[in-house]
Length: 191
Image (tube, rainbow, N blue to C red; front, side, top):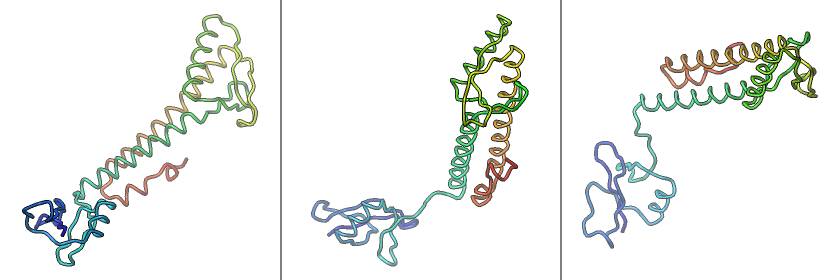
């Protein structure tokens, strides 16, 4: 016969025992079938209900621990949204009309290199952009001043995303319930 040993105060499952293997079975315990034991193992049960003589799962974390985990998950979600927005491109009117520029990390490095080259040589440089919101991409000639403007616009976009992410994360840090945390979204902040 198999037994589930548990903590008398909390009901926390402390271990399984089999009288065919173990000469002593600790108290308190409940008798369980082979099927109940298999189910408990398969489902990571951690709780014994001594009244109903059943096994199940119970979250033993404190409310504070649960809230901190929800906060951590929401902050990770905000970071992922911010990262996605940062690399999804930005618009600049440096060429006179709005053009979309790419902003993956390699694109950001390329822009810095082209700006630096244009400033050092005081020569126009080709740089890739899209006049139709990403439908087509082409290399267009930019003056050193235009490239600096593109760099400024990219930085402004990135900073505004980071500031918004920081604002949302501060709201999460000060939230007092999981429900309040779940209501904090990027979209609710005029984006």
